Length: 253
Image (tube, rainbow, N blue to C red):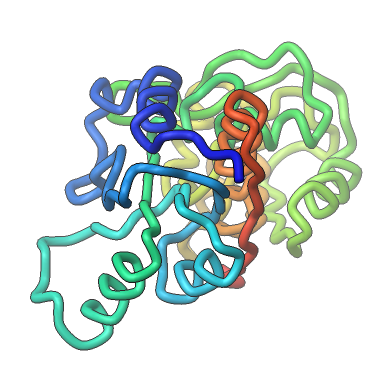
């Protein structure tokens, strides 16, 4: 069975994503989070590292799980109960975990926002939306009906779109930042877009969108962030000639 060393994959991921350059949220721990015995025969990709996605990766006989949201988002807790079962599952099945949060959001070719822009048919995109010292999204000039754009977004993500119609019915300057950027819609407006696409945001953004004079489209945190791990896994599969599979475990959020 063909394989690639885990160290070779980690080296390539680090070369592409440059995680050391990112000041991410505390606990994000970009990079290799769990080792295996050193060989990868099959790659699994998922948005989240959870007990369910780890179990699915084991079922498809993967040796590496690539995720956007990793295992660590808060101070380490005792590895007991369900956390112990998760750790035991990883170690018993020789499953490594590599996580890339902001580095995968920001990547101009493999990133979540880049992938969603491509799926929407937005061309000539420019970097957009500074966060923690990096531009995480993209914006594009176009002329597109708001309703048509919402239909494209639903098709691209497979999720129901929530529209906050605070802006024009014809969208001319569209900004895309995947995940949970709705609370920052004022920043998007200041950067010159009339339509802002992201994953989710709080209730008060309905009125804020009207006040800022922009459209906001929410397509789900999960649904907007499937693009990056798929693109990264596909790249690694082509480079190292090992198969990959996407584990779809939607949260509905």
